Length: 97
Image 1 (tube, rainbow, N blue to C red):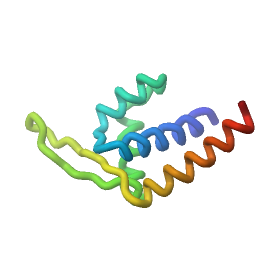
Image 2: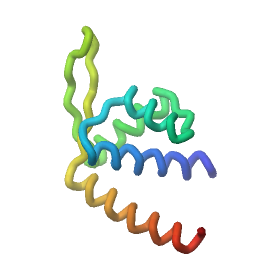
Image 3: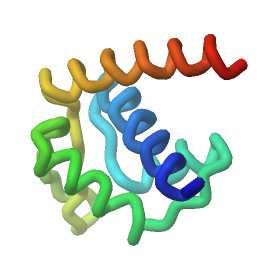
Image 4: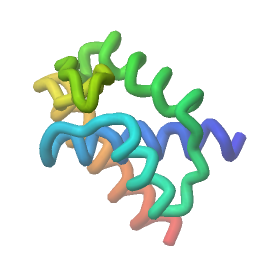
């Protein structure tokens, strides 16, 4: 159960940072680790792909040092989902804490 909860937190965290500017996988793994999430590429990249497939993120591919780096940016649908999540988080925190 805790894994599912944390995966939801990770999705919200990704949307938050994508709302601030473009993100890419390794950068997000480092960011999430800084918040105590032990996340592998095998967990992160499927989340990024599912957010893209769901229309919450868009992707732009760029070659960096001979490798393709995928940059993600939030969509309008992603912004709407993030704002709704923020409301729910605030309500939950006020009730639980």
